[in-house]
Length: 116
Image (cartoon, rainbow, N blue to C red):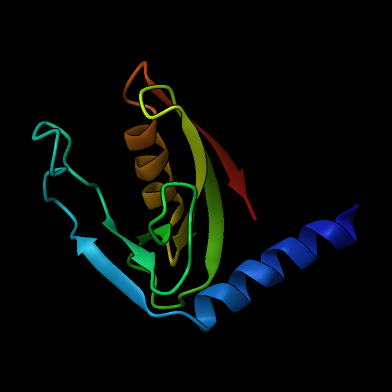
């Protein structure tokens, strides 16, 4: 089982390494539909990838210069009735906690944090 887990993280690292990170919601900016939701970290997606919502795979990018995958958030959105992952890249433990809290702020959206 440990082998499968490591292969999963290696696959995510490869996906990130081979993709351009596009930050379309910089840290401290408001969500486009919900102005009271302020992003705690740079938020964007991996260009030329596909997620459940048809856009690119979502990422949070932290302040750590070493841009490795630190964790993922598995999201269930009851309003959109979908689920997806968000990759946390270069995030400190504090930044991971901030992203997790941000994704769990609503009764309609819940996240499960999985550390590498």
